[in-house]
Image (cartoon, rainbow, N blue to C red; front, side, top):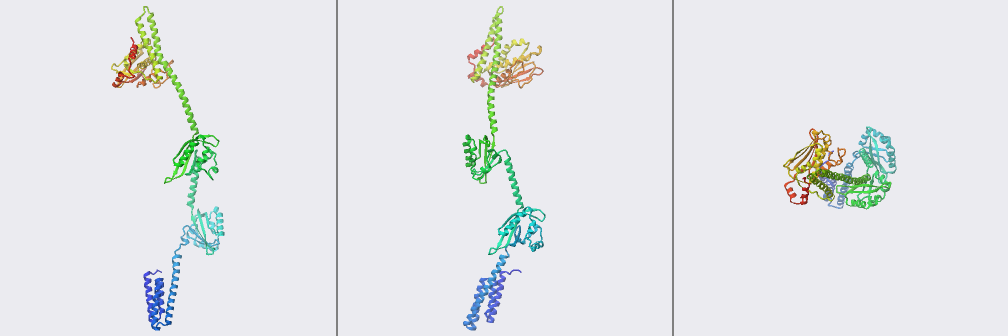
Length: 632
């Protein structure tokens, strides 16, 4: 039935009140006014009811006054009327309050059907008295089947849906709750209507009366299968992570923000010989204090300072130190640690790793010692190479001195003595002696770190002197000399003796390379040319057997001669590179080989420096010595 609106109720109450008032007036009996009071109390409210009582009392007095002239009985009847009206108001008000409680409170409270999950209720002895539709739908029971189970009074019917592995525990917990009245909290697997089991959490509490007696049990069964699977996956992931950390060949540890150790992986426990129960549980001390005694005494102070500073400032920890292993040996450790921070920058955890680098440190020490031994060996080898180089450089002028001395004797013993040729030969002897002295001077300058004496020279002049010097060897070897000198060559700033020795070395190598060449094909060619405005070149070509390895012939001690020591071309390359040039070799077309070296041409400013002064300018004595070196 549709509820009447407030306006309609007031109009209805006004109409009934008017009818009651008219009835009381025409009958001269105030009792009819009670109808108006009742209508006001029921349809309008308690305030209107009190107002209706007051107005009805006045009206009753007005009705009674003419008949009895308000005698004592009249006033008594008015008082009885007012009391009756008030009693009527009280009764109506009482029923209005009870009706409001029933309609507003009892009928609007949630029922078992509205409970999320599987809801149920039991009698104090455990007999089921209600199961919500969701629970029936889950287990696959109809309402009629559930009613039959309730009528039989079977208290264990629900056990057929519990997983066999969970049944005994669930039965014991439910029995305990029934006997003690304690709440039930249990997790069990329940079979669904399709035969699959899902995890549920049972929660039940007892409802009691004012005397504390249990009147009923109310419970919910919540599906936690997905939660259990997620928790199992999380545990498995944590287990895999722990296994990974315990398997990684590294010493890993964790610590709280204040330095208290919270985790040491298995390799670290085994490596240090610490037990997890002893060092990691109970009154665990800060990490620095836990392992400080295991640090080598020489590294203990720096380790404690660095680790404490990191824990205090939050900066990463990095240090190499020695740590005592379980067997008592100290080994080098590369320790590193980083803090984990939250979004506000607060440190949540410290994560550290200790890498055993002892073998690496020993290998580095072994390499260092090997480098020292190698350096000593290289110095010895360099000294040996230098000795051979000195002997090689001194050998050329000494051989020339011996040859010229023999020639000098022959010219003096001739009949008649050839004094002119003897005099020229004596000059050559003096020149060769000066060359040997220059070699010794350069060796002394090398050890005293003095610079080479350089001057402006003409390469064509140096080559002509070399050709005159080796004329005897050319005649003895029946070698034809071809000279192609560019007359426009500019002067170069160089050590005359060194460049002369380079040319002599190249010419002698060319002569020796043609020992097995037929006599008619023995040709030695020396050419100079200006490659560019900044570079001039000198090329020495022969018709010998060629070059087998053009890349290695300039290496020290590499030689293709049976009696060679492999230093001539190495010295040539050193001299040329010292002057800013380069030297190379290549096979000549057809037969033989060509060795070429280049030198940089001095600029005009450089020429003026060489002429104007400085260490590169020959003094008068040097000029005189140069003149002495010129052949007669």
